[in-house]
Length: 331
Image (cartoon, rainbow, N blue to C red; front, side, top):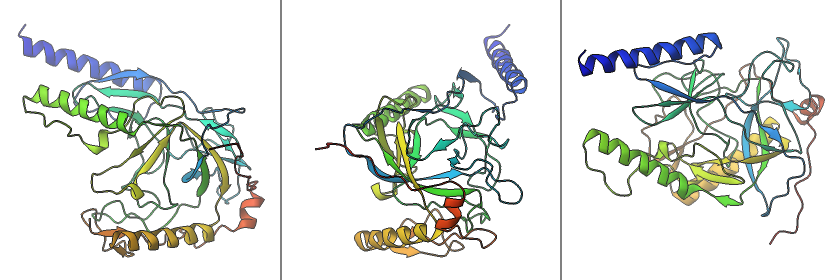
């Protein structure tokens, strides 16, 4: 049998085996026309009750999901849930439910991991809605909690405007922003960049193209394993500033679930200050913003689809009481 034919049959057998595994375990994962190798299964996040940071925690922001019934009642008072990974839609008692409480440190978990053997990139399965408004089946594998330094992001929400980038006008009723503390003991940003350089170097060797030393794809500048108390800055494109970076961290502690007035107030100040520092104009019209607008800062209000606004009293009624900040003898 010819070598090329054997290779084709080999890859076909691998893809078929993966499809059968996916179907058997009810995994919503798209198999492309290249072999994916299954690396490991899901590890849920977990409480770290006696954890004390060595350095004063930073304040960041993260979106979480509420478990609501059809009438908007909270099925899991006092708990919030991840948006896409290690989550489900089956209610608080669902098999994979992993609720988080306020005031508790949580170590990040990991989703099931698959590796594309041609590119070396890793992926995991997801749930929820992606940047195109469609149900997510596949996500890039980046273990760790993903956070931002302001409670806004144009890669989430509803009513996506097709053809204009990741632009949304409304917020899901089931989504809330949380103010969180993060552990910043070990900065692993350079480690993530070195991993991306190695991936590009490997791809260059396989393609026969010369590798330019120090070059990398910013989307690959991530870690496939979070070390103890690690954090790093991650940018989805090379034009983003540090102000627009994600922080990917090993541990978080939720301090407060923000009401909608707080979200608007924090964002208004943040983007006004960012515009003054950068000299860039704020684009507040999602219908006119595209991902190619590198000289403008995207920021617009994203009210809830039904016009409702969560108030402090609403959130307290759902069991979300503001927690004090961590205390310690930090330098």
